[in-house]
Image (tube, rainbow, N blue to C red; front, side):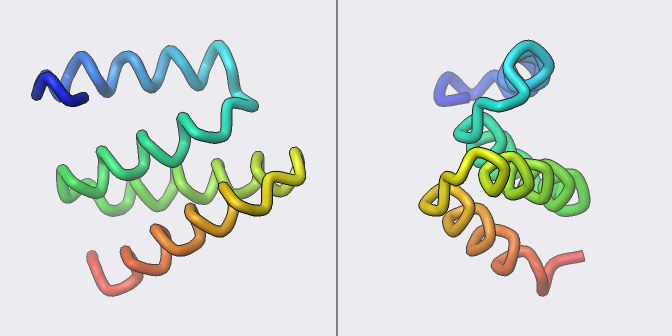
Length: 77
């Protein structure tokens, strides 16, 4: 993601979450990438999925961060 290769970053996040669906931080960072690319709908979906995983794992800190990120997207289309 930091190298600027968006396509590679997206592929990496998709593979990461497919292989490790309980890796909460992956949802947060992937959601942020999608939001940065103005892919708001996709960002909302990823963050919502991450919130569900964080709740299941009892990770209140990550859940809170993703809820905040999701609420910041509320005004976007």
